[in-house]
Length: 281
DNA sequence: ATTGGGACCTGCTCGC
DNA sequence: TGCGAGCAGGTCCCAA
Image (cartoon, rainbow, N blue to C red; front, side, top):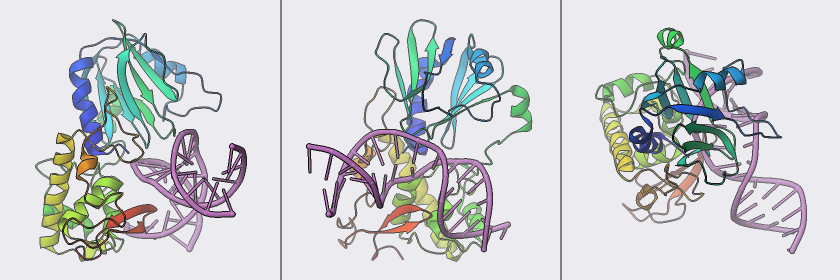
């Protein structure tokens, strides 16, 4: 499940390889069952023809979204959804199954968007839209930005009665966290995923922000988490490394690394939450 | 306004 | 061995 560290890893790999490259053509392979990868754009043909001939000037990231800035002022935005992979390779290689979108570059390389579960999304915003829709996805603050502080977090938690994990998963509150890193950050800060969000003390909010930042930075250093299903890979198809360092995520019944109690699971906001029932209160 | 749950998807695992 | 049920979850949408 690509979350902030996985998307950032992909961005860092991609930027030096494709910045300055010219797009020859963008292709959507035929899919008899239909594919809705292009979102909020009225015409598929127009979407594709607008990209042909453009040069990618830089590759950015906002939360879990990859931003490809184009030389005409537009920006191509990709979200990997649940199962999305972006694979960079020579065009001569045989096409992967579940390929939803292919960006072919002048010179022969291509970037393949492979996405079995079809939750991935592609957007094309114009310069004018960028001006007016500064934040088209209503995303909250980036947790790794300097301006992201405990008081900022506490402000957004105040009065909220929902479980803290559900609130952290809300991209309007803080942008870029998913199921893996909310579990890991809550474990590190000793807070139960079920705690009412508004009940966190200032000290707990401080610890939580510190844990969120630490776990995200470590995961980026490890090039992301390839969990049990191995759905996340880097642009070269390599696995990440942070799965070796997970304390609680996908470790039910295994001993808590801090106290040895068996890791428990529960259901929060429709997802499985993993936590230590002794350390996290 | 906030919160919970279903829909969207497909591949995989599990139990019978 | 085969089959269906259940599960995985990021985001959107609707209802309470």
